[in-house]
Length: 230
Length: 353
Image (cartoon, each protein chain N blue to C red):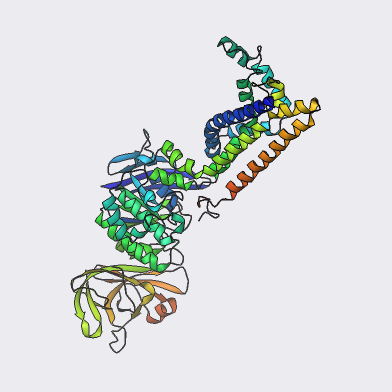
C-alpha cells in the first residue's frame, strides 16, 4: 500500500508543478494569441492545440528522442551535468507541460478575448501603459479563465498515461504515477488494489469537472463585448 | 493656442483625410452624418487609431514624421458612448484608476454631479445617466489637457441628456478644459458648443463659431435635424404682469424679442435658438395678430431644401441672420426675391442658456 501512497503523492506533485509552470508559460502566450493580428497566430495556434489530438505515444516517442542521451536536449542537460532527463521526474514535468499546454492556453485565450477591447483603450486614455493595462484590467477580468486553466491543466496531468509510459517508465517515487500504478496492478491481476486507485481517480475527476462547471456558471461582471457596435 | 490636425487614416474602403486648425479652448463640436468619420477623427486625435500626418496640441507635437506619442502619454480624457466603466472596479476605484486622487476634490466633484452616494457601488448597479456622470467625474478629476467625447449621451433619455449637457458645459468652463464633442444631433450641439466642425465623407467640410455656422444656409444639416439659427442677447425688460421678458439682441437698434419668463435676471446674457420652420414671412407688418415677435428684415438669399416643396429664405436684420422655411408655393405667391424688405414673424424661440 505504501507504494500506492507514494504514487498518489508523486502524481499530485507532478500535477502541481506542471500547473504552476504552465500558468506562467501560458499567460503570455494566451495574451499574445488573443490580441495579435499577426499572421503567425495561424501557425502558432494549431501548433499549440496539437497535443489534444496527437496520440500520447507519438508525443512520448519524440520526447524520448529529444530528452534521451542522443537528443539535443539530452545532450544539453548532460553537458550541464544534469544528465539525460528521460526516466526522471523533471523529464515527466517537461512532457506534462507540452501534453497539457492546450488545456492551460485555451481557457486563457477565451477569457482574454471575451474582454471588451474598449476597456483597454479606456485604460490607455487614463494614462495606463501596456503592462499596467495587462495587470490591472486584463488579469482581473480574466480571473475565471485562470481558475479553469489551473484546474484543467492539473487534472489533465493527473490523467496522463501514454507519455509517461514512454519517457518515464515505472520508477517508484520518481516516475511511477497513479495511472502507471493502476496499469501495473491490472497486469499483476491485483484487481482489488486497482479498484481503490481507479475509483479514487473517478471521484476526483468528477469533482474537478463539477468545480469547473460551477466556476463557469458564476455570474461575472459585465465585461462582454456589446452585441452590436453602434 | 490651437489643436492642429493634418492627418490621413484608412480603414477598409473608408478614408479620413482631415486638415484643420481647431481652437483649443471652449467646446468644439464635431458634427456630421453617421459614417462621416467623426469617431475615427476623435480616435486619431486620442491616439487610439493609427494614422499618418501631424497632430499638435498647443504647440506640443503628438504626432509627426519623427515620433508618435502614445495615447497614455497625451494627457487626454475620453468619454466613450454609453458610459464605459471597468466592471471589476467600484465607482470610486473607477474614478481613481491609475492615479492618486485628492479625496476632498473627489467628494466635492461627485457631489456636484450627484453621484457621491454611489461611490462604493459597482458599475452594473448604475443607471445609464449615473454611469456617464461617473465617466465625466473621472475625466475632470484627472485634469486632462483635452477631453474627447464620443456621443456620450446617445443612450440617455432627453431629460437626463439636457441636464448632463448643462453640467458638461458648466464644468468644462470652470475647469478651463477644452472639449471636443462628437455628435450627429444638432440639438445637443447647439446647447453645448462654442465652435462646430462639420465633417463629410472623412473630410473637413467647414468650421467656425456655432452661431455663424448655423446661420449659413449652406451648412448641411443631418437628416432629421431641424434647421435653426442661434442669436445672442441680453434680458432688457421684465414684463412681470404677463410673465414675459424682453431680450435685446446683440444688434443695435433691433426690435427686442419677447419670450416667456422662466426666472431670468435683468441683464442676463442668453442664447436663443430659432428654428427655420418657426419663422414665417409677411409683406406687411400685421399688427392685429397673436405673434409677438415681428422683425423687419431684408431678403438676402433663397435656397433650396432637401424636400422640394420647401425653400429656405435667408433674412438679414443688421448683421444678424434669420432663416425661414416656407413652401415654394408661398414663395411664388408672395413674389419674394433677394433684397426685398419683408417682415419675419417668429412663432417660437428656445432659450439655450
